[in-house]
Image (cartoon, rainbow, N blue to C red; front, side, top):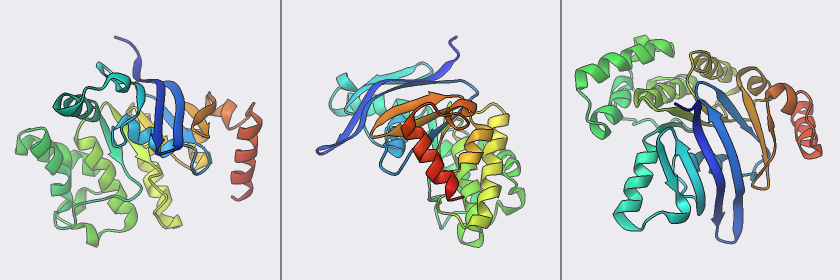
Length: 255
C-alpha cells in the first residue's frame, strides 16, 4: 500500500471570473501533518474545502487513499453527488467556528454523525466518543451543552466530533482564529497531540511557530498557486522564494 494518503493533481477552482486555485499539485504522506500558509485570499481555505468537496473543484483530481474523484469528468446528477459524498467521507473538517448543535449535549454532538450518517451502533459510538472526550481533556463535560463551555472547549469538542467519524485525514481551517488569545494554546495542544499520535492532518493556520513545530511539510500559497513547499526548516526557517520571505517577515514582525 502506498504511503501517500492524500494526492492532489492539477486542481482548479474559480468563483465567477476569480481564479482562486490555479493548478495545485501536492501529496500528503499518511501519519504526517501539512500546514497551509499564505496571505488572505491566497486560496488556502478553498483548497482545504476542495479536499472535503465543500467547494467543488472545476477540474483536477483529488485522491484520499483508494477513493479518487476526477472533477474534470465528474458525472452530472446523482452519480456525481455519490462520488463527491464518498470522497467527503474520507475526511473530517474542523471549522474556524465550531458549529456545534446548540440543543444537543457534548456527547450527542459527537455521536450524531457516526450513528445517523454511518449507521453505527449507538453503544459502540458512545463508548468511542467518551474516549475521544477524554483525549481532548473534556471527559467531565459529556452532559454539558455548548453554551456552557468556553470557546476553546467548544473547539475541542469540534475536533473530537471530527475524529468520531474515523476519517482518513483531519482538515483544520484556521481552528484558532475565532478564539480569544488565551484560549489558543489549549486547542493547538490538542492538534499537536493528534499529530504525535499519527493522525494525518492538513491545517490552514496563521500560527507560524506552531506550524514550524508540528508540520512535516509546509505549503506556502499565494495567488492560487503553491509558491514554495518543503519541510518547515526550509520554508519557514530559510525560505528560498522572495514572496515567502516577505510574507513571513511581515507576520513575524507583527508577533
